Length: 114
Image (cartoon, rainbow, N blue to C red; front, side, top):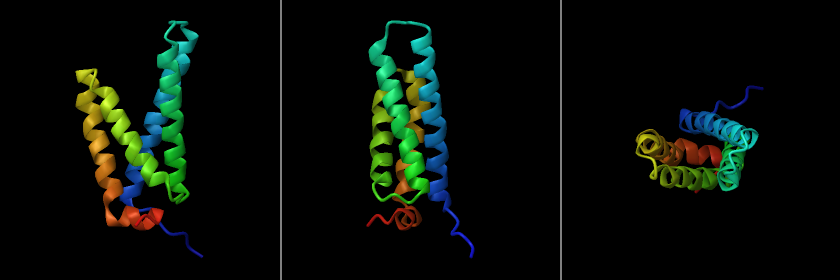
């Protein structure tokens, strides 16, 4: 029995969420290790990084609410990046791409979204 292949409209956001999540968790750990005193930043990075990993695994496992989590994370990342123009130039197009990819019919079919 052959497993159904994940469509690219889901595969791309999954890959991006893995990369973003691991990067944010690593950044959180490095901030904690450097004792920067920026506890709020460490908590934010760890929380959003963990949420990105949950969205990635959820999308891979066809968890229904994962698409909604993906939409919300893309919007959160875009809004959070607006305070830094350099980050916004990269993050906002990625966030728009995630939302557009998850909005495609093949992604909705994969996650069971209506």
